[in-house]
Image (cartoon, rainbow, N blue to C red; front, side, top):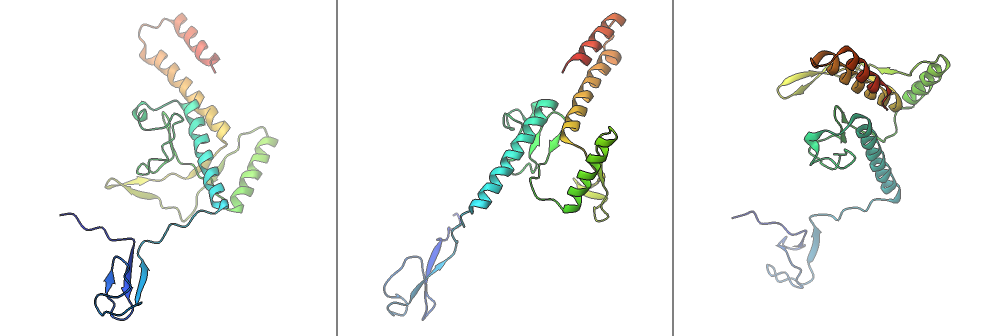
Length: 208
């Protein structure tokens, strides 16, 4: 027999502490009138404020945006075809515990305020990179970051954090995919002739 589900509220007699699930004018235990007081067992959920709703909406838009951008440049993961949304978003599936999936990336998106020093550091390195025609890289190696974390009975080694711009990241993904195609042609296609290899590599490099 299943466990009985308790009511969201009860009524307790202030004189004899008798508990009822329905209100009555007279306590059936001590026969005293007007002593039953309501006790809320499951409080009503507080409604989100306008600012909280705006924050949640912005977070979802940001999550969908990065999911779509990553899937556009990295491609879909066939293993998640029936799980992920059309943009590659999986944040709505709570047990997965990350926001987006693409061919080679599991992406977690944080649309939150970050420490001021990090903002200043990113602005500064972006300015200097632009001055010297370089790409910006913000490397973070915090002393309080654990070196390893448990995973499936073993210890997973954590890397330090390398922050680059999303546009640069997408460019590197595209280049990586092109290199993979070229490697497959050069190393794993025994039927390729030199002229065919040159032609196919040129076509790959010219593609978007």
